[in-house]
Every structure is written in structure tokens, then in C-alpha cells.
Length: 164
Image (cartoon, rainbow, N blue to C red; front, side):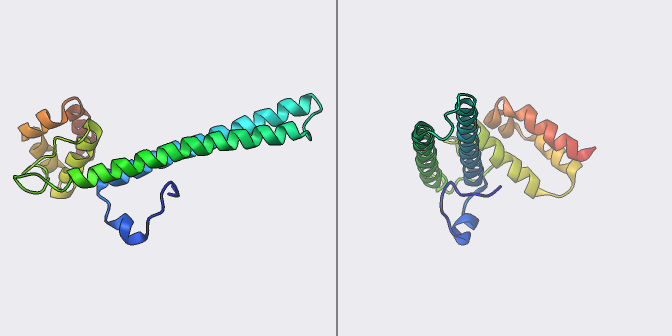
């Protein structure tokens, strides 16, 4: 996936956390969907006007410009939302009075449920390369059950797939 929703240099991308990278990818997917929807609308407009023998009309040009402007507004809203999310994540990932946020020593309860899922998943994927030990550690982790809530079973199923 080509990332062009925001302009970051390679060192800036490498400094992003896994949660921030997930945010960037999700925003990029939204942008790609908006662009595809815009192209579909313009194509639909062209074929409609072609069926009415008005495809070379300035009306089509003006309507396509209007569709492009609306799409650019929506993309800009997604971009601004992403920038705010990245800034908030950077602030909230710094830590609290106990110290820097790290799972399981000092979990960040300011994260959303999907973000918590990514944090815990990354922790268990990096803690050991033995899939069976990883799954056993996860099942004994009582903090993960409370921290992840409904995502606990989802992560269990993912980690169990590595064992088989």
C-alpha cells in the first residue's frame, strides 16, 4: 500500500509506533476508498451524459470538478483527523506518573480497544518465537483478559493459529 495521506520522511515513519502505523494505514485505506468512489461517480456521470449525447458538454466538466472538490474536502478531513490522532497517541504513549506506557508493566488505558489489541499482540509476538509457549503465556495473563475485553478471544484465536 502506497502511503500518501500524510508526508513523512523515512526516519519519521520508522519512529512511529505500531499503533500509529495502524492509524496511518487505516486513514490511507479511507482515502483510497474515497478516491475510488469519486472515480466511480465520475464514470457513472460520463456514461449517463454519453447516453444523452451530452458527454462533451461543459456541464460534465463542472460536475467532475465539483465531485473532485467534495472528495478533496473529505480527504482533508481524514488527513486532519489522522494528524490529531497521531499527536494524541504521541502524547498518551509518553507515560504517566508510574513511567512510560508499556504492556504489561504499565498499560495505557487511554488507548481504544483496537489499539490495545495491537499493543498486546505486538508484545506477545515479540516476547518469544515459540508459538506454544506464547499461547500458554497469554492464557495465564489475567491482565490481558481485563485490558482487552471483547478482543481477548480474538487474540487467543490468532495466537492459537500459530500453534497448529
